Length: 279
Image (tube, one colour):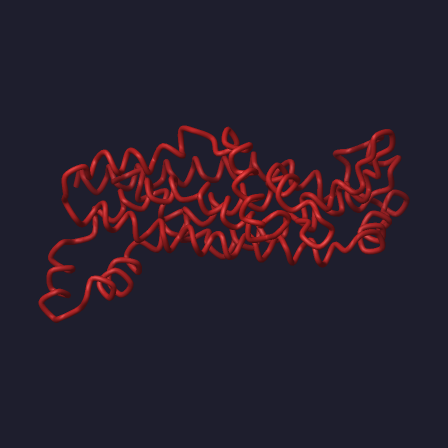
């Protein structure tokens, strides 16, 4: 009874914390979207008020569609995010499975080495990354961004997934080996389905920094045909004049994929966070 009660309390607390965080996190998003449908004067006069008959305007969205190639920017961001996310989940899960399943000398040191990226920001190596990408002829290309974001997301993915994979029953994996399943089939058919909440959690927290990043697209993919959404929105920010209607409209459109991903994986995300809280 006490164990079940403790689990229910932990689950309720995790849900409450996540709900509070969601409300706080979504407030700036709501303000951006609401102001994207208002005139310039209304944005500064009453930023928290919803648009009405006098303040409603679509000039920002019209400007976004007329200037620059926002569809191409959106496509570039989508390609980079989806490919990098797939590589992070695949390689991160495989490395986490190896660390959690096989015991060998230096296992702990290898895990600590792979987790160093969480403590050391990848931006500290910007100069070296630029030199390597230029030497490889990958500037400006989307491939450079995919490689950088994959390296950026792997440490966190390995750290989280290895903890969840240690909870998978050894009896289940041994039964698969007795039935003649290879290690790859055990990994893909038995282990991965059981850690889907963890995969969804890693996917959400990996996608957001990639989609919103401005630093590496500015350095590695600044050409017109390789610009991402975040970099493309900078077209409307000038040295002396900023088209706030267009900036807010571009940001509102850029927010949509993140919201869709959150809605799709929300149940798995909550399960992953709850499991980590009550484990």
